[in-house]
Image (tube, rainbow, N blue to C red):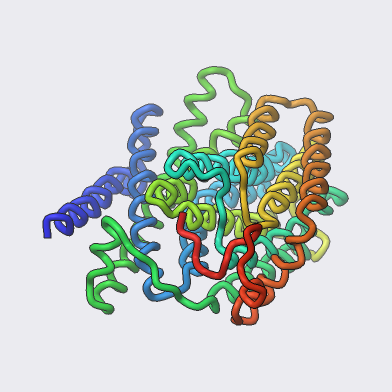
Length: 422
């Protein structure tokens, strides 16, 4: 009983911590930069806790894959909000379009997610378990397959001068297909701990109502707090003479990407690193499909134009940024083609991201993109035996059948059919 009381107190405290951020946004009041950073940052952190507890409990009623996808969509709302505003401004003002801030924010957010988020989850997992490889569920083969298809498509966008409505149709269709197949994965029993356990102890109707309220409330807190939090960080950065492009590409996404990274880290810390990584993989899928696909729509509506070949314009730097981001995505897919991530692979993801962060030379961006591409090919060649099995697993998930690997039995090189909750 005492444990349940503490759990409900934690839920209440997290909900109250979101109130100042929501209130300031509703009232249109923006505190001074440092105070604003603290108020809105705490609101995002508290909302991430509520989101993780609610989503874990939701696994009692829906599949883990769909629960993780819902987490990813809610947690990535700030990134959508910031990028939509930037794309809208670009459509309304040609000068804004030339600055390329929408693409800067989109590429920065995607690269942060893989370059920082994935390694952090791995090293939290390693710190807690001392296990040298993080194994994800074979159901993640579905996300990886859709991510691979989207990456194969996006990597050719830099050959053109616009992200067009045709790209919108292709990428948004991929996202809808991904959500459809994810929703069909069967629910599996999951062991709840802490506040999620207290929520799970409720009867069906009250539990579903409370979980729904928590998810909506956390989404509201994240959506209300992310943009002013990003603005606070940008204003603080401007005091030190940091360029606007750099701030929009890295500092703003650092704020907007923090909810899903925090949720993933919380899951990893509580012994569910595989689920935490699933959140980040799912976030990457919806950013790499829905986010990119909807940018041309925001741009064209603001500009008052329409045409299948019209869309968000790209200059040479923006095309290089998209190529580099797509190449990083391809390498990340190659890392998980065997549904495992090792210490070396996690360290490589972080090192390649960290060393490119402060390099503004356009040739360096292309070189990093080529380095990612070479590493991707090398890893795929090394793990070529796992590629067909991962594809078969994805097809089995889409058909709502037993996973293909289960028919062959688990092997030392490949995880078995049971859920991996490291």
